[in-house]
Length: 217
Image (spheres, rainbow, N blue to C red):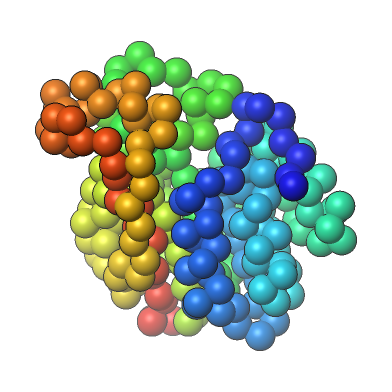
């Protein structure tokens, strides 16, 4: 059970897929883990329980940051929780492992970016946050550090792989799972079909976890 107001992202299949990838990847002994777009703090908690020596969680939403802080403290986890945009709040800091479940749902022009929608709407391509995160990833990783990023196949994982590799990271898809459309995608199905992101009548999406490794100093 996690404390969260209705407008903070509820952990669901993408969260649990990333948590599973975390358990399979393991955390370096004494590792410092960063949870980007932490929401309720579910992945920060998973990292601490998996053996992280230190956990930092960041979210642009004040409500999410408060929720993550409370959920960690209730469980005796002394995570550092930062409220702010990850591209500004984390400058100059490096981590052994980065976990990220950023907004990645393609959104038509005029779709809201406030309240609950801020947790999923990510521009027409679904990459408004992903592209910034890919560019910043080498700055966030210590030597031999790794990242695990979850998003939908609708948000062009090939672009994620290409951008991460172009920055000198090794990158590959390490997990995949098919899930039914939730309420947001069901409501956008006609628009998504009209721009060619899904087939008419499609009602499922593939989620992927991409792992990136820093192999250079």
